[in-house]
Image 1: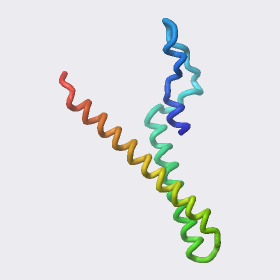
Image 2: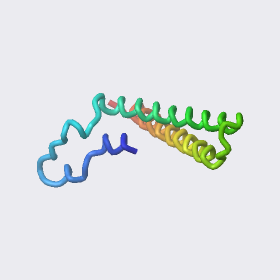
Image 3: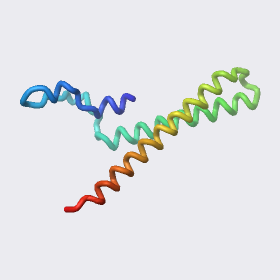
Image 4: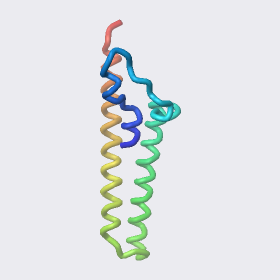
Length: 101
């Protein structure tokens, strides 16, 4: 969610004649591509954590099934979000390809 906030333009920049100056710390270095790579790596980390929690439950290292289920649900939600973002990006790319010059 922080990545989305980092690339969002504040509503205050639309008020008035001149756009508001954005501090350099508001946008991450590298812009959109860096944010996308960070989000993908974060989703991967969540998947790895869920795998580790599942393995710990199966090997008997932990008896906490609730924490394992929460980790699995977080991994599922993060994967679904990543796939929806991918679908939106592909849709936008296809729309740009259909534009006539």
